[in-house]
Length: 102
Image 1 (cartoon, rainbow, N blue to C red):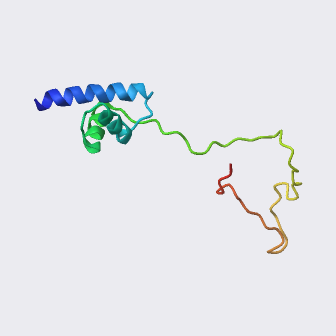
Image 2: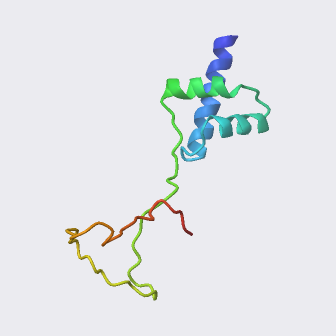
Image 3: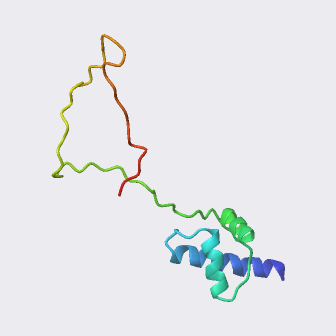
């Protein structure tokens, strides 16, 4: 009985996983199973997915792009990669790539 349930559940998980084109992980697959009337814990679904080598495809949150056709003013490059200075506090630089923008 247990092995039959495991086989049926594994087939349903495989079906839902491929229906979602590999994007659903165990939490969403559990919700899909519940909508079909099949009860299973998230940890058990995760275990069955691991056994079959199924992993959700995670979309990257940030994509680095360069838009060179914008209308914003471009600041002149005063340093031009010349970081040799005569005294401290003569040149200040910073990096704001950690700030997420829209």
